[in-house]
Amino acid sequence: MRISLVTRGLALAACLVAAAAPATAQPAPGTLLFCDADNDRVHDIRDGGDFTFDVPFASFVLLVQDVCLGPNGDLYATELISGEIQIITAGGSFNGVPPFASGLVNPGGLACSDSQILVAETGTGTIVDATGGGDLSASPRFAVGLSDVSDLFRDSSGTLWASTQDGNIWDVSAGGDFTLVPPFATGGGFLRGMGEFEGALLVADQSNDAVVDFTAGGNFAALPVFASFFGPRHLLHVPGIGLLAAKVSEVLEISAGGDFTGATPFAEGFSEAFLGGLEYIGTCGPTALSGCRAAAKASLSIVEKKPGKEKWKASLAKFDAPTTLADLGDPVTGNTTYALCLYDAADRLVAEVPVDQGGGALCGAGQKPCWKATGTKGFKYKDPETAAGGAKKLSAKTGDVGKGKLTLQAANNAKKAQENLQTGVAAGLAGATSARLQLYLSDGACFEAPLTDVKKADGVQFKAKGP
Image 1: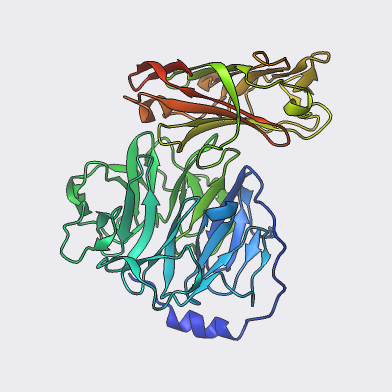
Image 2: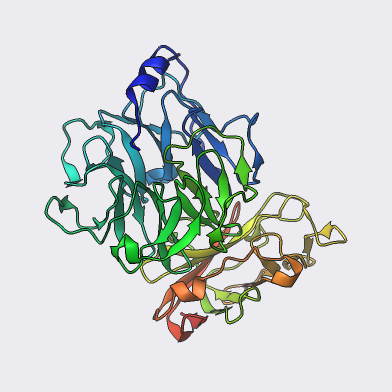
C-alpha cells in the first residue's frame, strides 16, 4: 500500500509555529538518530529503551523521513510533506525555521558524503543533488526514470543504490536516465531502506515483511531472506551494537538474522516510521582526516577466524614530531576520548574502535578507573569487560621526534557476552592491498600511518604494516 499524504498534510498545516534557528554545534560522537515520522521527531536512541516520553533531539512539522551526516559535519533531514531539507545539527525545534533546501516533491531517503547531498524525490521518481541548497524545484536532476524511488544507499565499495516502492533496485552511481535501464534487482514488494552487513547488501521489503539479501541481484523470488518481521523500514549497521532495523513503531537489532516476530525491541515508544531513517554519528569521520601526525612505524592485526572471538591489535609509533602530554589530552581527570579508525584504500571509513570512557569512567567488575597516568610519560587504559567498542587495553606514550607510541588491543568474547567489537571487517577488506590507520583524540592530536605492506587479506584475517 502506498503512502497517503494529503489528509495528514492538511491536518498539520495549521500547526506551524515560528521558532528561532538553533545555534551551530557539532553532533556528539556516538549519537544514533531515528526518524519517528508520525510524531515529527528525531530521537537519539543510542542507549535503546522506551522513548514514549523522551525529549527528542529535534522536532519538525510534517513527516520527517531520513537524516544523514553531510558537508561541514552537518546533519540534514528530509520533511516529506513540506518538500524541504533542514540542517538539524544543533537539534531543537525546526517549526517555522527557514529550510536549507525547498521545492522538492515528497523527499525521502538521503545519501550524504562530506561533499555531496543526494535526495530521493519520491513524488517524481528522481534523485536530486541538493548540495547547494535553495529552491530545487527547477534544478537539474542527478537521476530520472526511477518511479516511486524511496531510499538511497552508498555501500562500502562506493556504489550508489536506489530502491523503489514498486520493487526494484538500481545502481545509480553514474546518474542519468534510467527509464529503459534494467534494474539490478526486480520483483520485490514495497522496498524501503537499504544497508550493508558483513559483506551482504540488504533491503527492507515492507510488502513481504522481510529483509532481503540483494547482493547477487536478479529476481527477488530467488533472493535469500535475511530476516523477517512486520513492516521493515530502514537498515543501519552500528559499530558495537550490530545491524539495526526500523519497523512500524520500533527499532530491532537483527544481526543474527532469522524470524524477529515478537522480538524484544532495541528501542520502542514511537508512532509511525514511514521511512524510519537511521544515522550513526561515529567517533571517526566518514573519510580520513588530513594533517594527522605521521608514524614511521605501524601495524594492524585483525583476526576473525572464530565468530565471537574476534581480536584486534594496532600500533602507531615513531612520530614525525615530538609527542607531549598535551597531545595526548587528559582521559584521567579530563574528558578526552580516543578512537581507532580504519579506512580503506579510498580513505573511506571501514571500522572504528571508540574508546569513549574519559572523565573518570570506571571499568570492569571491580569498577576501577579505566584510565591511569603513567607518571609524566602518558596514559594507560584497561577494561576487562571491553565495554567501549571492544577495547581491552590502550597505551599512549610521549616521546621526542622519532619516538612516542600508541597501541590498542580489542576483542570479543561471546561466552562472556562481550561483543562490542565491530565484526566483518576482515571480510570487508578481503583482497585489499592497502589501508589507513588513524587514531583520533577528542581534544588532542590525531596520529596516522598508511598500511601499505599487507601480509594477509583473506576475508578472515587482515594483517598489515606501514608505511
